[in-house]
Amino acid sequence: MTDCIFCKIIDGKIPAEIIFENEDVLAFRDIQSQAREHFLFIHKTHQKDLVEMVHENPDGLLQIMKAISEFSNKTKLKENGFRVVTNVGRNAGQSVFHTHFHVLSDNHLGKFGK
Image (cartoon, rainbow, N blue to C red):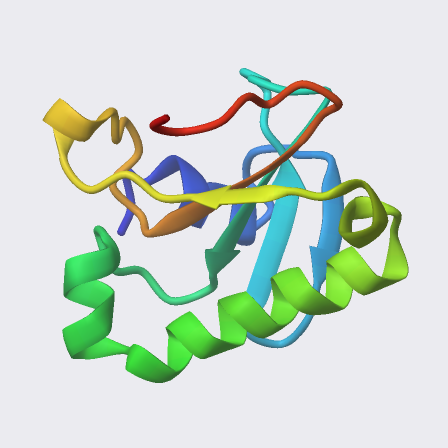
């Protein structure tokens, strides 16, 4: 994907503050942070959203979740608590169409629902 900003980050064409990387997954700080700690975890293969990834690269989802788990165990994220969020489609707030998971941690994230 030549116009995908996340693919360009993977290729090193756009700088990012990398916080985790392995053979399959890359994670970096979100430049539009919504919490004290806000990271984006992406697979190094391009799928536009969670639905597409489930069909084209289901193993990639597990690889991302394992990367989040590994990172949370190496840092204080697990101890402090964190939230994992993904958006599918513009109406849900997806602005970059490369499957990604937001990992957020803060003292006051609030609760969903009642």
